Amino acid sequence: MEHTQMLNENRDFRRLYGRGKSRAGNVLVTYALRTRRGYNRIGITTSKKIGKAVQRNRARRVIKEAYRLLEQQVPPSWDICFVARSKTCRVPMGLVQKMMRQQLEAIGALQKES
Image (cartoon, rainbow, N blue to C red; front, side, top):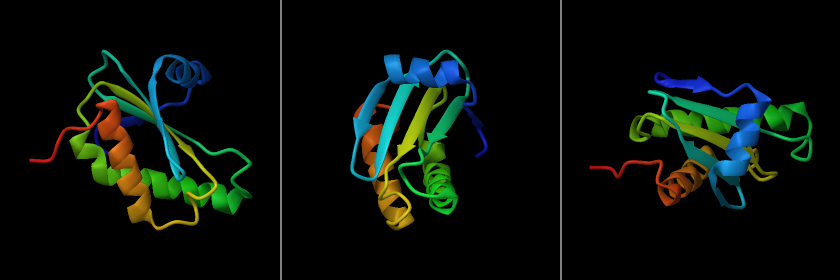
């Protein structure tokens, strides 16, 4: 991820959940908030409801890869948080990417392909 940093602070996640726009699907939930930074930040949340560590880590890897493939289409200055659902680790990465694209477009955080 070239132009993206990770969200680490709890206050950043809380601000994103409270003020950000959100879209939910059966595979992924996306929160996004426009910022004044010149770069993007992403955070990934996987709870213990998803499964044991192996499933949670797979869900994180799948989400990171799907975002990496879409990163060039996301303009700078966005904070984005992806929340994994229980299906995230059991579906193909292409489906997660498709859902991520739809949710980011609905929020307005994705440039249209030209």
